[in-house]
Length: 246
Image (cartoon, rainbow, N blue to C red; front, top):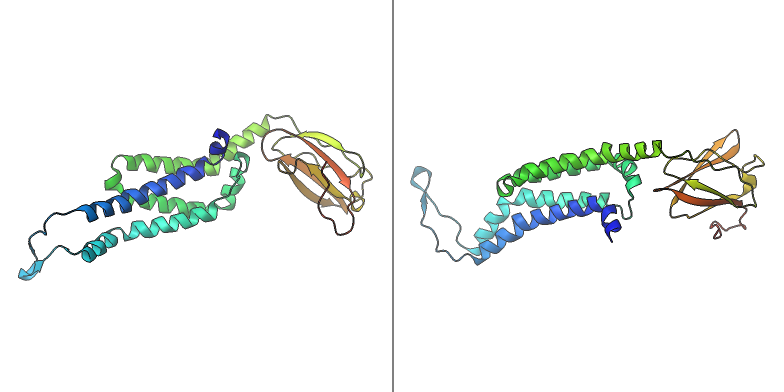
């Protein structure tokens, strides 16, 4: 459970913030407005001797309440939509760097929306507004630089991963980390003789295909941490694309 929460800490934090803003600025004020039974205030003198009468009916109060919070509502809805677009179930820590740079524009737009929401609600948030601004800047820094740099430093000190040349029939085992392995290919040096590269565990291994001088080369890496991987070049029957369990 704790591992699951840690993997999705960014999503949960942002979602909690949006929900808190929604309740703080929209739901709670609306509840206070509906439960208020104070008598209608006296007319207030306006310009040129006219009278400006505060809203008294439920419709007028609702309209005034909605207009005052229109930007907060629109920005909260826009932020929720962008968050849904950015949400990626199962995103692992090692993949945060690639994910953040692939979605850099949407992340910046989302960060700008959150910043404007904080500014619009600065009086309501009080001293917490500055804290939230610092958290927002820190989160952006970690997404774009902190986490990718940390993964790079971690991989820098891990032992180099080498997967030896295989062949079309024997199973080969090697240990992978989050850095790409050396290039390898079928031992006969051809394009794996038309065979498919089958590997396991498929949920934790990423494969890279390269073609050099007409020969197929492959590289493997784990999605997170050190993994003992197995691979084999295997010809599949015509029409079959799924590798057998190895």
